Length: 140
Image 1 (tube, rainbow, N blue to C red):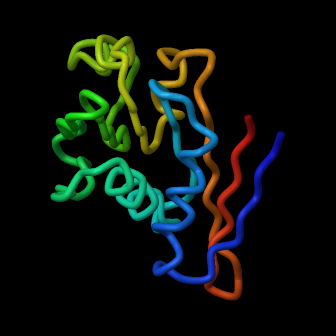
Image 2: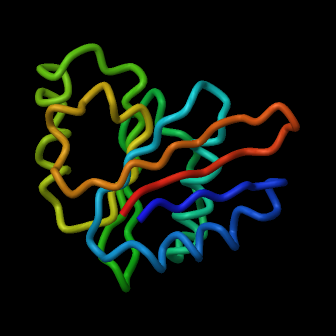
């Protein structure tokens, strides 16, 4: 089943995040694809906040991994693989072990570590539209 949403403004993202999470069983690895500035981090923030995180720390572009403890769901991981240069580098910094965790794992630029990703991952595609809206698509 393919789901396709048009997001008119950033104010709509919390509702979309809550709706998206209804489709996703815990634990789950979710990968985001989209050009720079498409809204991958913004939608990830909405998802993480919908799961109960009060203090979102921003994109982990330089740290690569942000970990959020959430009492009801254990941990949430947010990865930004933009700076990853190779699968070997991803393994060396421990991404493979995190991918084995029973948690929510949100990954931006996941195509850079695609060989390490689990088979049951959900790919979310975010696209900028000419009218300044965003298209969020995923398949279950």
